[in-house]
Image (cartoon, rainbow, N blue to C red; front, side, top):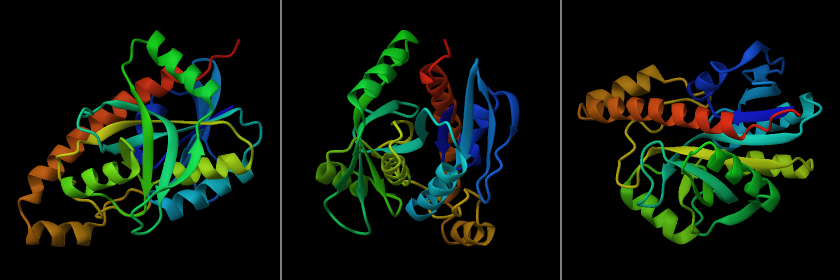
Length: 249
């Protein structure tokens, strides 16, 4: 079975739409589904947003599932490199984490060269362009261009998220192979409007959102762009994941 992690429901939705024989994932406090992508059994799991929630969810899922052949960590990410545009696909060769406000990242997981080669071959066969590089996992969103550029320069990472490294670490502890591919939702120069307005499950905190919009009505345009970019990025993500899921022989 292939286990696929996303952070929240809007990331899971395009993958769920591709499932056949779907039924609920029966793991306490973790949303998700079982089903098939093509002829391959998969489990989809929502980790929640952020390092703490993702680690807790990963532990529950790994403790609750048996027969995991591969872990795929996916979802959206922010760009730390200028050449990555909206919907651009990043395949991680290593996953880094930067706890708290630490300037220098700690390397967490090196992706197996064999699995990295398999993912690259599958994407190439599907004619899907991608970039290989490090993905940085952070505790707090990087919302400004200066924050993103600084993080990229300090870490050497080309993209940033808030979950991948800790999930990969939990997989590594259990000896489970893991790959990570993410699609870009915000480029380096884009201010991340609305960051912090969602809870750990990806649900918008309505009072916080209303208060933020009252204080800064110009956020409306940024939020609209964010929603549009999310849709584009998650669609590209689902296409890429479907291409790399190993087929049963």
